[in-house]
Length: 163
Image (cartoon, rainbow, N blue to C red; front, side, top):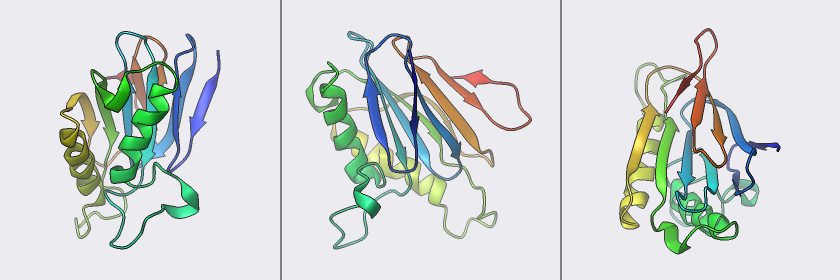
């Protein structure tokens, strides 16, 4: 039993009962949580931006989870290593984050663009989300529990909730 902490651009997965994947302080970033209902494996990526800029083939510091278009395939490969099916087949997806924190005027809409970028990539795999807690102006911390798939969310000054 361990907490597995993910930072911006990180990806991790576990099939060990009692493990909890955790990422903190999601603003415009989005956590994608994937669960294989057969094995109970859980994977998570902390995505910062919807897509790599033209001509960029690697994310900052080689973090595969930094961009949605590189994070999702990497997440599915990581999950395969802990017993999930290939190419994300049959995974249950939850999305958390994508808030508007520093851009109150909506000039950049990074949070919304992140959510749409993730959905665009998921659709290429024939997947969609079964639950979402996205948007708003909340900073969120996410805890995904193995093998139940319960995703608990906290935000300063609010009670814990689940998706």
